[in-house]
Amino acid sequence: MNTKFVILGCGSSVGVPRIDGHWGRCDKNNKKNIRTRCAAAIIKGSNVILIDTSPDIKTQLIRNKIKNISSVIFTHKHADQTNGLFELRPFFWKYKKKINIYGDLDTIKYLKKNAKLSF
Image (cartoon, rainbow, N blue to C red; front, side, top):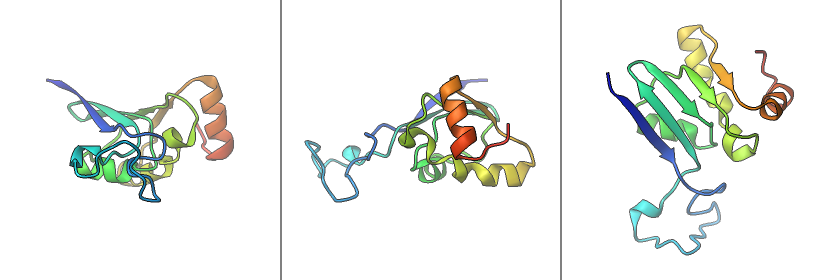
């Protein structure tokens, strides 16, 4: 069984273009410059480990046909890595199983306090 590493998004914390239409130095005529915020997935069979939950995670998962999440690893507590967390609720509803969450102590404390997580 092969393992795949999928880059779901590679843009800055505000994506490209920004919400105000600013492209920075990116060429807006190159479709590769339309970049969602950072997230990735490691996929092996039905096991999917998500790395960060960007605010764009719903679009990223649908675009890549990812229909299950086994675990999430948070790299840090910034909003561009954590604000998509609640988009994962349908996976809990569908499978009636908590999703494992991992991160450093500071990030986990932040998520427990601000996202009202119970794990």
